[in-house]
Length: 96
Ligand code: FES
Image 1 (cartoon, rainbow, N blue to C red):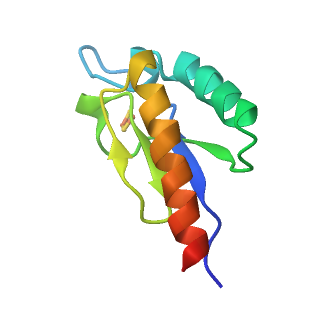
Image 2 (cartoon, rainbow, N blue to C red):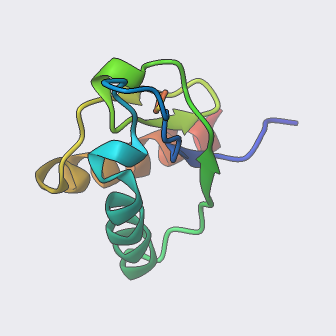
Image 3 (cartoon, rainbow, N blue to C red):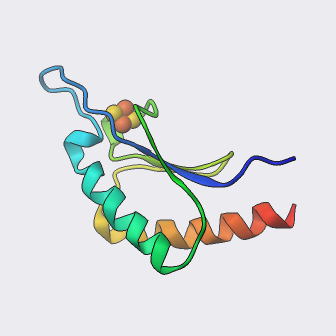
């Protein structure tokens, strides 16, 4: 049985001086926006908050799972593309 599709979003805030982190780069605001977009499209996929996806210097970071693409340096303008790719991933995942 395949694992359900989900969107994983880093919400980590590294506390070291000068350390880049996703929460330091507005990921919390992006989560609210993408959750609203997913709900508006009636996609039944969970948005999972995680502490660090290991790409801190290129945050904010999201990933479609299982096995989907990483998105880095996300801003609000890229959310439409991420939701579009998420839909395509869901369709291909269900076709397997
Ligand atoms: S802080 Fe987001 S990937 Fe590490």
